[in-house]
Length: 415
Ligand code: CAO
Image (tube, rainbow, N blue to C red; front, side, top):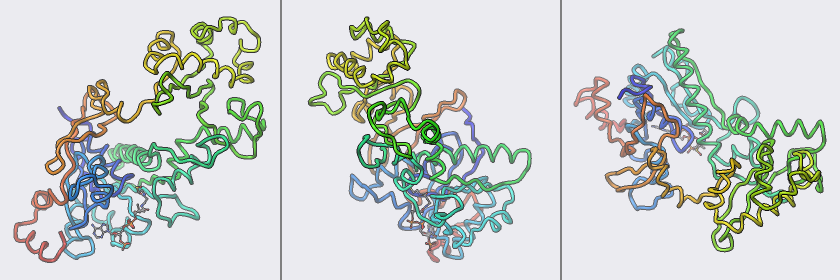
């Protein structure tokens, strides 16, 4: 079946996580993604966190599916000649080098635009223009600078980073959307443009509810749905909220049967106002439906701790899946705390292609996360990541280089 981005060619100059997430998504949507790597070394993640000696790491394989790999040394004359040919024939150049690195290679916007005025140049950087624009940035730096860490963690604890890679993969997603929009606009203008997704900005975009809360706090000096209310103190900035819900319906993580030995025997429970009578009934507190201390959402905000303690007495009598079964039937919004082991073995995620088993020539079989975006007319088949330079000769032949040219480029150390 045809794919949404059939015919789009991507010059993939990305490395580590943020940029590769973006180009992997574009590949899953059907683009031809040609990953350019340094000869001999390749993307640094090929060697990081290895679980099998001498074999591309899961870090690399899980971010570089459906791509081709070409080795080019851009610091050699022949390497730049190959790269210019790629610039001429590709639609998008995606990069996430440190600030200024692309310019230092001689691949400036002016150069690219002169070679191919239709080319879109898409970049991830740690920061946009401003005091930190020259800084190198990794995931957790972005989480800290984007407002996430200051608002995550225990109420009285230190700032906390989250396991979701919102700085890297979150920014890659934003960049992919920018690229698709620029391709759409190019259809009418005929021109390429620059697309920039700074990691700080992407994290902040994902944390916008906390900027909402900052303004509410400044106006009202309190945040009723936070665990600090009604007994604790609020300072001048949005505090850490533990596991409290970020929305208008209070929620909490509650223990389930087996919590003493299973670190994930917990459920997230939301006391949605619409189903309050059903919640009271299931936990055996029917009297709370009309009790003025609990009857309205506003009244309950003053008593969230005892409310959740009482609900937890009930959830502790069920395992998390039993609790889910009972609560879902009553339309009470809740979710089990799933471990990665449970997710890896969940049949419904395998059935939808969200968890996929892939075969790799040197690694063998491994699990990966497939495309989370499902298009009915553009299904995704996840194929293995390329070996370093696996497609160099094939791509150079497509670009019109002869066998003799390839030999000369090899002798120069350019590929
Ligand atoms: N041929 C020749 N040279 C190459 C090359 C190639 N094919 N590919 C890369 N290089 C060179 C670059 O030109 C650069 O050289 P100079 O320093 O001489 O200009 C050098 O390799 C290193 O590039 P880098 O500075 O981007 O890499 P780093 O490992 O030092 O830094 C990172 C990594 C991620 C901190 C930095 O790239 C960065 O801040 N990127 C932007 C933000 C980002 O995406 N962060 C997310 C990373 S995922 O957690």
